[in-house]
Image (cartoon, rainbow, N blue to C red; front, side, top):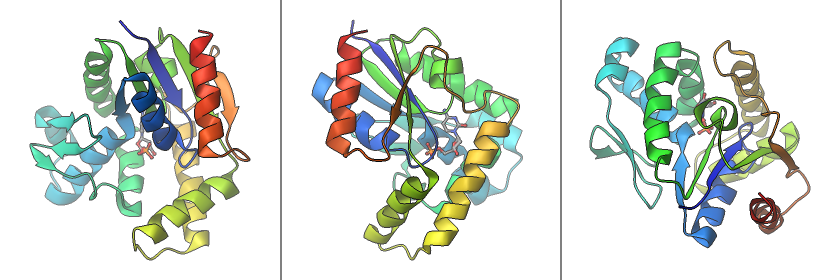
Length: 211
Ligand code: DC
């Protein structure tokens, strides 16, 4: 059985980009836990139903191409909007939402050979992970990356608005009571502010080979 790798950090640090590449290089499964909170946010937006009811019956699936399915329907592109980013962060503060998704995430990691990214993977979801990475970058750089990403997708974006949105989400995710974003005591810190994607991937692979 291969390792379990946990990658945590704030929005825009590059977690999903590098985790996908590391997964491909190692032949591991990539699990994007943020996508799961986004799916809950999307269902709330679509149905306006009571959150407890949504969580109770929700079906979330991630396939091996990192596609996301909500109740059997693909929502991969739909969950990548600033509105859903904010909603995902909003719903993530509720204990019953976290409990449900944490259970699903632990099941997904059971077979090993996985790299899972999120906010609380090394601290809460998989405290016994073989490798823990805390990936961060300056707010300015994370906002720049997210801004470029939105522009490339043809979504109109204003840099300052993107930066404000990320700062607000950082604050919410760090200050919430249950499983807040923080670096696990045994996580290795990687600051990607001045690194290329390839350099971050190389650092993570090097860390994996020594753990
Ligand atoms: O990684 P992301 O930007 O797609 O995550 C969206 C939101 O979901 C994030 O702002 C907080 C929440 N989240 C969480 O609380 N715990 C996780 N493990 C992953 C995401």
